[in-house]
Image (tube, rainbow, N blue to C red; front, top):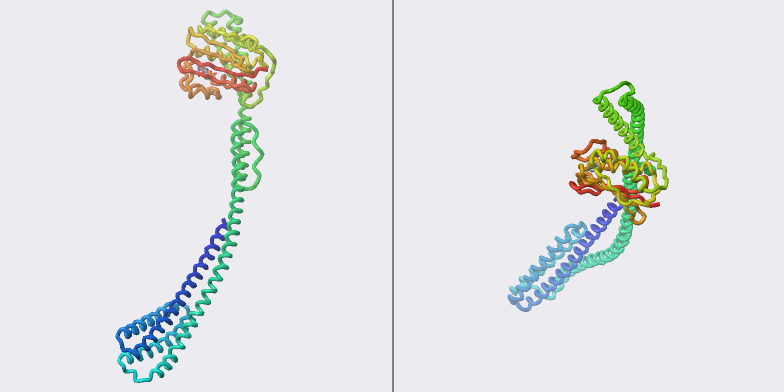
Length: 462
Ligand code: ADP
């Protein structure tokens, strides 16, 4: 920027100098021109006087007067042109005085010659005229010569200046190009650092380790330092939250399990006979405790998966077997909801996966499908092999899921906005997603509101 300002200022100064010299040159040329004109007109005046001496003719007289006037105007112009320069002004004063003397002498003689009243010998007049005329012409000539010299010098200067200007422009443009190159490198460097920060922000959102801090001591490095500190603080807070949830869940689980056992024993009459109402109440209380323990387990698992400490126990097994076990475990729920379970041909679908966790996914998807299916409808399970991928689909004829909720239902604690179905805390699908992704697979849903949904997950064949 500074280079650019210096360059423009120097260029401006050079151009200004060139302009002022060009003006001076034009001025000199004008002086030369007017001087030559004055000399020429003075010659005309002299010729007219000689002619008047012989013919007292009005035409010659008029020509004489006209030339005289033009010469006077020329001298006045010269005075104006030299007014701004002290030396020239002084010189012009002298020239003008000589001119006035010569012109006044010629004018008087001319008037007398026209009226035939010269009274003097013409030869004498010519000698006197020469004496008045020559110093004036000689001074005028000198003035013109001096201005010619100035013009010639100005031309030489002009050539030198053009050369200088060319060199200056070449150097200046090179410097500007160099500055632009460095500026673009600098901008690239800044953008690179900003990109690194953007990438850090994405990594933080994915809870992945950040890039090492941006080096330097400028604002970007400072901002990145603050970002790293914030990320560490967030990580620490997340850790504290996980610790809190896991201790609370563990602390709650044992007493709840004790209560569950006591309720089960009481319902079985271990602590004395209960009437039918009592048995029913105790059984419901036991179910509620069971559900509470299940929720705590889900919460614990979700936290573990969120923290990335999900360890898979991989084994090779047939998907058909996992589906069968899952269907068996939701059979009572399906019967109670009067929903039929249909299994399409699922034979010989070998996968390498954590069996217990995969069963958990299928059970979760099946339970949801049953929960949201109207009585008298069917839930269908199918497996298809597409290339090297197994595509497991669980289809229901329930209320369906609106497009706005389809992506979000896999997020933690997300339940659809108009949830009219059975209550839950919105962790089931999050756990399913984590388990499938931990296997390198993908999970999703296709749905038409009012017609039903198909939850699917895809796993690679071994
Ligand atoms: P929840 O414990 O609340 O069931 P999920 O993560 O399993 O949590 O499900 C999240 C939400 O997705 C549910 O509350 C429900 O609104 C919606 N959902 C899940 N499965 C289905 C389905 N088969 N049909 C309609 N809605 C469903």
